[in-house]
Image 1 (cartoon, one colour):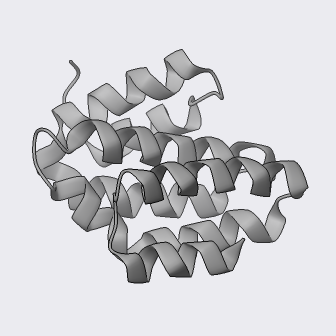
Image 2 (tube, rainbow, N blue to C red):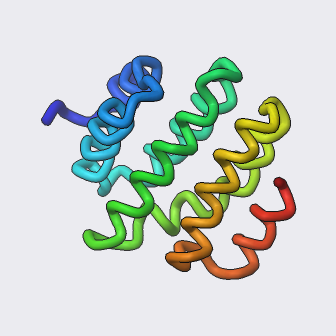
Length: 129
């Protein structure tokens, strides 16, 4: 695994594609570097806001993969994504079409099923859609 740095993360996020393999590969790298979770979430959110509309949903898929697959190793990512996840959902939904919102709804329903977040956050996410 390559060494963690903000520029390395920015480069990896710029190369992220909508394929399952791309999302999972970057997710594993992020989880490997979970001790930098606060920085990772900050950079992820900044890059999400700068990304082209067509790529924003992929950033949510990445967050979903990281949040769910890192739970066994520790709560860092779930906790660190919590303060920005509602705003991230709003940002993606504001530029997304109905298909995008439907995909976001699928992510949200998984989080509700698996109780990824407390009800207050899940309700705020639901209100966005």
